[in-house]
Image (tube, rainbow, N blue to C red):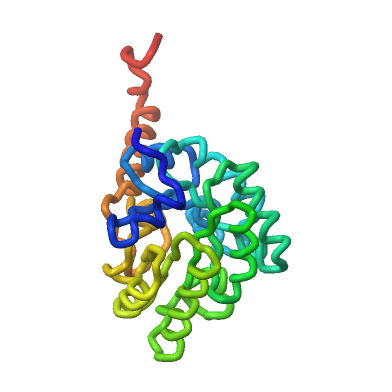
Length: 265
C-alpha cells in the first residue's frame, strides 16, 4: 500500500508525474482500481447511465451519489476519492454548494468534490475550498449542460469559445481548484490550457498534452452497452466475456451439470 494520494499531492504532479484517473461507483471496482495503482478515483455522475440506466447524467440525485461515493470510499486506501456533485446540487446558491460538498466529505468519506463549469463557479469554489474541501474543476464539454449544448460535441473549436475556456481554467485556478478536467476539446486547446495554468489538467478527449487522463471504467472495460465516445479506448471486452460465462452457467444448470460433486457438500 503506497502513500495516500491527496489533493495537495495531485497538484504537485504538475510537470513532474502523469496523473492516472478512472471512475468507480461500487466497492469491488474501487478496490481493484486502488490496488492497480490508480491515483484518483472519480465517483462520476456518469454512473447515472452506467449503473442506473438513465439517458443522461441529469436525473441522478444527491442521495444516489452519496450512496455510491460511500461504497467507493470503503474500497479505497491509497487513491484520492473525488465525488461528482450532481446537477442542481450546487447551482442554486453558494450556501447550497458548501452544504452539499460537506455532505460528500462528512457522510460519504470522499476526499474532494468536482463541479462543472468555469468562471461562473468561482464563488462556489472559493467558499467550498475556504471550508477545507478540495475542489476539482471541469470545463469544456460539461455533460450537466447537455440541454444548453444540444448534443455531446467538441467544445472550443472557435477562437472565441477557445479563449473563454482558457480564461475559465485560469479562473478556476485562482479560485482554489487543485486541478481541472478538460473534456472533449481540440488537442491544441488542451495543450494551450495545460501550459497556461499552474494546476494539473486531467484530460478526457482533450489530447495527450494534459497532465493526466481520466476515462469511464465501463468504457475502458467494454461494459457499457451504449455508444462510447471517440476518445474512450477499450482495453478489454468484459461485457462479452460476462455474457459467455452467464450462458455457460445457464446451460449447466439447465442440463443438470451444475452443481457437481466438486461444488456440493
